Image (cartoon, rainbow, N blue to C red; front, side, top):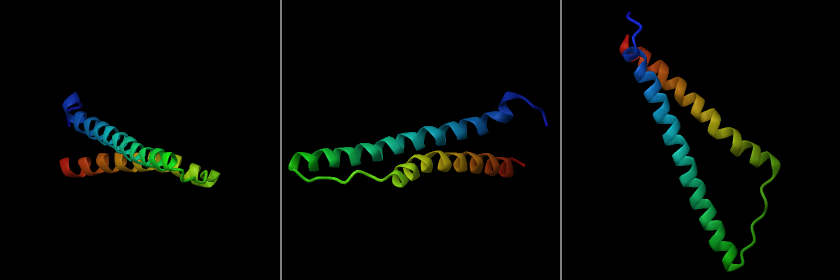
Length: 82
C-alpha cells in the first residue's frame, strides 16, 4: 500500500471532526446548564456546590469519550478500507 497523504487523510479528518463536534456539544450543553443556573439564581433559588468527586467525574468524562471515539473512527475506517 502506498503511504501517500491520501491514505491517512480520512483518519485525521474523521478524528478531527469528532473532536471538534465533541467540544462543541460539550460547550452547548454547558451553556444551557449555566443559563438555567443564572435564571434560577436571579429568581432566588440556591444551588448546592458540586462535590469534588462530581467535578472530577465531569472533567474526566469528556477526554475519555473523545479518546474512545477517535480510536473507534480509526479502527472502523481501517476495517472498512481493508
